[in-house]
Image 1: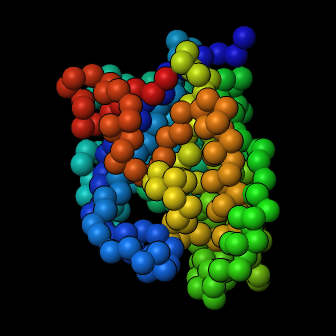
Image 2 (image 1 turned 180 degrees about the vertical axis):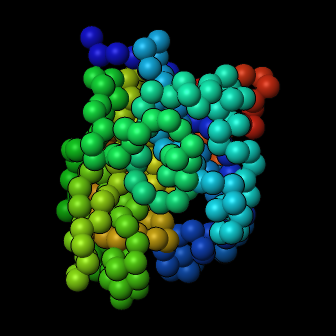
Length: 261
C-alpha cells in the first residue's frame, strides 16, 4: 500500500490588492473592481518516516521589497507547529518563483532541485491531463500581445499541469509548474501551488493575470477539475479560503496553519 501522509498548509504572508490586478482582462467580465486578498503559503507533507516541505516561502526582506506583508518568518512558522528546520528530510519545489524558494538556503537539506527529487509512493507529480477542445479554442482566440511578449519572455511558466519545459522564442527552456498529489488517510490531497492561485480561477474560468501559455492555463484547470471529480481535495496556492475550507492545525494556530488530510 502507498505510504500515507498528513498535509499542513502554513500561511506566512499576505497581500491586499484588487481583482483587476489578479485576473487577466478582468474588465471584460463587466464586474466591478473590488478588493481581494492573496495569501502566501508553503506546505508540510509528513508521516512517521519523513517530513517534506513543498516550497519554502519568501525571505521576509524579499517580501517587504515587493510590497508583501510577512506575517511570520517561515522558519518560525515551522517551529510554531513543532517542526525544526533540521527535521526536514526533503524539499520539493513546485517552481522557482521568489515566494516559493526564498528559504531553501536556510535548510541543511540540499536535495531540493525539483527536477531531481525522488518521489515517494504516496506523493507524486501529476503528469496527466489535456485541455478540453472548447477551452483551448476559446483561449487561443483571446491570446494577446502582452501574453506573447511579457508573459512568454519575462516570466517562467506559472500555469500548466505537467512538469515540463516551455520554449518561448529566442529564450532557453523555462521550467513549468507542478501539481502535487499526496496520499492521505482521508483521500488524495491536490496541492496546486501556482497552477491555481485562487479558487475563483477554477470555479469561474477566470485566468490569473500572469501566465506564459493561456491554453495551458485552461489545461491546468481541466486537470484540476478531473482530480477534484476523482475525490481530490484541491488546495489553491494563494487563496485565503484555504484557511476556512480546512480544519485548524490547533486552537492556537488558527491564523497560521490548517490540517489537510
